[in-house]
Length: 251
Image (cartoon, rainbow, N blue to C red; front, side):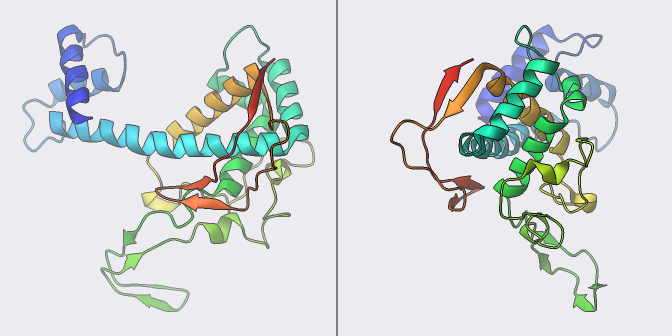
């Protein structure tokens, strides 16, 4: 992957224009040029490759797994899928591709995506962190250097917060007027200073990819196919649904 990215970077350098930014690599090259004479700058080529690898690795596995959960929930809840179709047809139509700006006009679809993240719960214990100083939390002493493993599931499935914590319910993210709301307990990207750096990228990808699929297709379970369960999953880098099949019919 690093070798492949190096080839892309080399190609960018050959056509790079500091007055026109095409993508992340161009932006990095522009800043690298500005910082060329700055001691200890972090705008170095190896740093660029590391950043790109992080974008692809962290930004691919998590997004594709969340979409995997979303498609499963759509075939299990055709009534929800129909409401998503209606909102897409009304706001976007079929003559153009979805844009991020559409999200503000699509509270139900936005709620469905957030509920997919909540119940899909793809990184239930987040990533390990480390206490950088001695501290006390709710009476518990946490010495400096202690590994901290956040239990995100405790918030996403909290029975005191969510009306139906173990069921797929987009209503968790809608108020009485049907407007989108986000409860404080929704923390699939963790929280605090070490919140996931890719949160905004992931939200953008999820909305564009999910609405693009549902704009073009109606999803079904194949005939005579056993109904898959969302309550069983396989754990790897992320928490994924068990393999299932679906039919996609062009709308």
